[in-house]
Each structure stands twice: as C-alpha cells, then as structure tokens.
Image 1 (tube, rainbow, N blue to C red):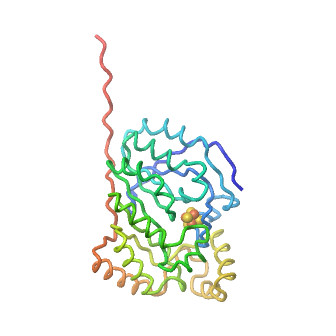
Image 2 (image 1 turned 180 degrees about the horizontal axis):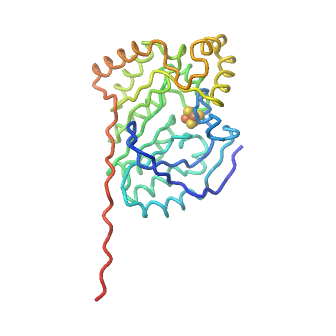
Image 3 (image 1 turned 90 degrees about the vertical axis):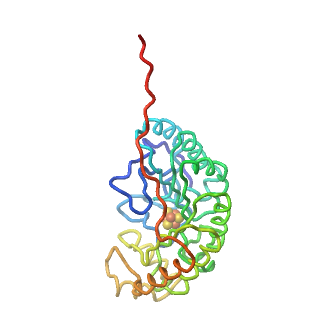
Length: 292
Ligand code: SF4
C-alpha cells in the first residue's frame, strides 16, 4: 500500500560526528521500503514503523527542504538513505529524491546517498551539478551472487546492476563506492564472496568500500529475519540462536579472517577502506546593505 502524508520537518541534524559518512544532516523522503531486504534494521521495534512494506510518501518534502536549506549556517553533507532506500520503485512516480537533489544543487550543498538501486542514474545530470561541491553514492552490496541477492534483497535490483551503476557514475566523474554491510553470518561470510566484491568494485570504478563483517539483530528485525531464514535457509535459525542469543551485534564467526582477505584485496586493487568526506564549513552570510 502506498499512502501520501505530510511531514512536519524533513532535514535533521546528525548528532555528534559521523565517522562513517561525514554527514551533517540527514533526510528521509519516504517511510517504509519496497526493497524488503530480509535483514533490514529499519524494521526494529524501536523505530515504531508498523508495517514496513507499506510506503508513506512525504509529499510536502520538497517544500520543506526549499524552506529549511537556505536557513542553514553550516554547509555539510546531507545523507539520503538511512531508514529506507530513496531509489525504491515508488521514486519513479514521485521523483522526491530527484527533486530534492535539484534543491540541494541550487543551494550548493554536498550530498551522500546510500542505495541498492540503479534508478539513481535517472538523476545523473543533477548529481553532476551537486558533485561540483561534493556528491558520493554508496551502493550497498553484500554478495557478488545475483541469485543470493534475489533471496535476501528481493525487492532490489540484483548486485550486478548495482555494479553497473557504479561504473556509469564513475564514468561521469561522480564519486561512487560500496557499503559492504551487512555480511550475513553463515550465508555471505565466505572469503570468495569478499574477494569477489572487492574485485568487481575495482573493475567497475568504485573508489572505496566500507565493510562490516557481520549484522545487527534486535527486537522486530530479528523475528522477521528468522522467519525468512526458515523459509529460505532451513536450519540456519538454530545456528543463529545458538551463537548469538539476543545479541545486537552479530559478527561473522570468521570476521578476522575476512578482514584480512578484504585488506589484502583492497591493497591489490588500490581501493580505499574509507570514503573521502566533505568537511562541514560555515556559510558566509550575505551582508545587508546599510541604509544611510
Ligand atoms: S534497501 Fe535498506 S532500508 Fe530498504 S529494505 Fe533494504 S536494508 Fe531496509
């Protein structure tokens, strides 16, 4: 179900320092996500999103952004894609991400987008404008295997299309990389998978890969994930329960080995394990002419 709503605010300030992406602000144009990844943390009870498959469209988001952005005194990176994917299929109809980028470009702000969809390519021209200041697109890729990505990320384009999108962005001079997280224990935590993702990242022009060799599980997301494991990976739930109990952080048992494989592959292919970030800066206020 898709429902249109009016939001009260759209641009939030990120508390503290964001060491992963260097974000100063973040923005969610939708609520819920059509990509339906089985491991999604946004399903956690703490976020109080009742039916995550129901999409709420913040139809006044662009007006709110037009109003909020010129008031900001610090120019800092705006993040899209923390609680849902801004380029899920519904974006084709509403174009909220595309229009938000136009507002961002007009106001000279930097942006960082996390997505699993090559739909982002529709906004190539605007991204090129934003990248005069700073634009980075991080594709979440957790497996190099398209069949596996269809099982665990059923509503998102397969990994191969995400790699192709990186290639297209890089060819247009736009900074693109990979958020390689989560890596699902007992499913994706093979040395071959990690080495292959790094190799394909390099071949397709990615600049960086941000890794995490594990996943998070908590109330709400855990029950959903375990139900999908029972359907698609019979027998695995018991291994999770045995190893992780009610833990939030579930590192892959062999994460140290995977990290070594990852570092060596990045060195071999000249890929960074951190992304170039935008440093926030004060915006010079235009002085009002004094009337004599
Ligand atoms: S794309 Fe991101 S927000 Fe959407 S379901 Fe997958 S993990 Fe969740």
